[in-house]
Length: 157
Image 1 (spheres, rainbow, N blue to C red):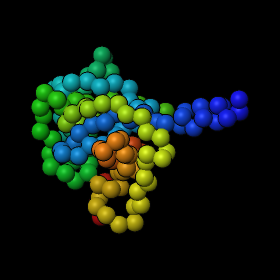
Image 2 (image 1 turned 180 degrees about the vertical axis):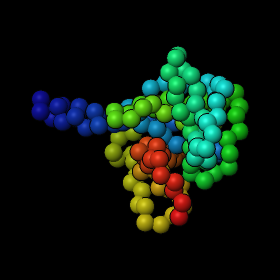
Image 3 (image 1 turned 120 degrees about the vertical axis):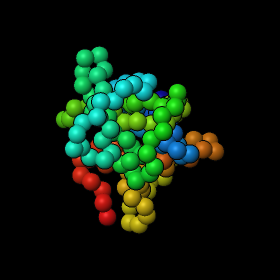
Image 4 (image 1 turned 120 degrees about the horizontal axis):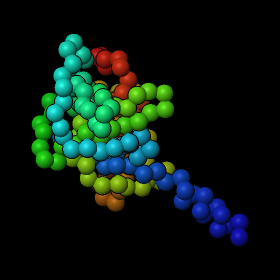
């Protein structure tokens, strides 16, 4: 009977990620941070904000700041399509924040043996925002380090 409990315990450590597309790459966002996924809507600009900060939206009476992950990672500016979405992230100590993605694909469950950690010693600026690479069958999914993405500091080298 103890063996069955061990099997269940290891199965429970799988984490769920929402797989999103940004450009031609797939990224995973820990589902625990996601509050809502909404269609693109009018974003009201806020003067003198960071270049990656797109503005604010009104979501059911709550004003939510929206940022471009593309701009934050030093990629080209967002191009909005019918598949573009704003993912509203929630945090314990901070207010909600919306991030723009090109497309929401699916939800995947990944266990520790399906995730390779990423070393941050060298590499591009965008690697600072990745804490692992998930393997979902034949597909590789870069897993976002949400706290690095929402950090207010500019990531200029």
